[in-house]
Image (cartoon, rainbow, N blue to C red; front, side):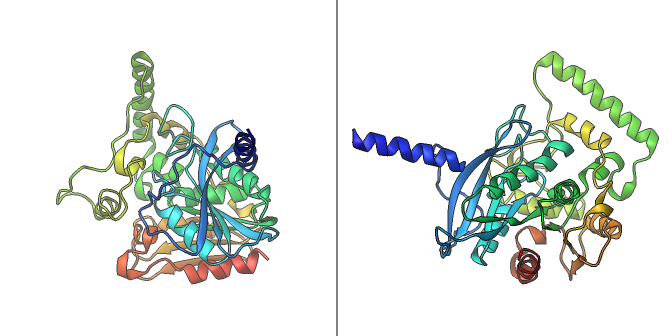
Length: 344
């Protein structure tokens, strides 16, 4: 009897913290587990009522009464927390932060149906929901919370910093503006007439989806590479489709985005008010990244002397997902010093 009561109390205490006792806790990341941190699965809701699932990393040295700075991490676009965002979160936890790597709405272990949907509004809100959770976590100083977004979630992170004044420092790594690339293509190559034809096709697909009661997936990475693929597609493939970064829950590894997600990305441009961000922002990009112009252009819009652009020599877009092997491209020392400087 006493044992059952204790178990019930333990489950209730986990629920109060947002910890999901039912989710499998086996190590299924694409990076090695650190012996310097503790990790637990947590759940929290965004303001649309969608339950998000994250991995909470804490330094093993943390004491029950400590109040540490915290960082919410997500991305890349189409990835899961067991990939790049988890690597960043674990490494920063080793360096003294409480970190939360989370799956965005409709993806990974997070809830929401239909699956594999992207939304500039909801994905921006996901960062603020992570801040909600961290602000109420026992070992976090709610006045010292930052965010870090990778790839498409670099753009959503900056978008979140525009609206959420609780975010005290923001880093965008190898950033995409997903609304810009959806509407205009790479290097803004899609003109208005072509964009109209794209919208016609997507809206026709909506009709078909409703008729069939299912959602067609957009084209993803090829299962095998050909010599005709652009170099950046090859770079993605070598991360997502090989043991380097493959994960079965990752859309880019093992799935397809809902095709009609593009409609909201085309129609709701983010970053319109990035010039109003008063808190510090660090934009990090690879010198050889095909996406470099996204980061450079948003940096031009940022104002104030607490904004910084860091270009990593010889790095491509994907090198900043996991360091690019022996390139060691991720500037973790710089990231650590940025957060320690501004989350104090």
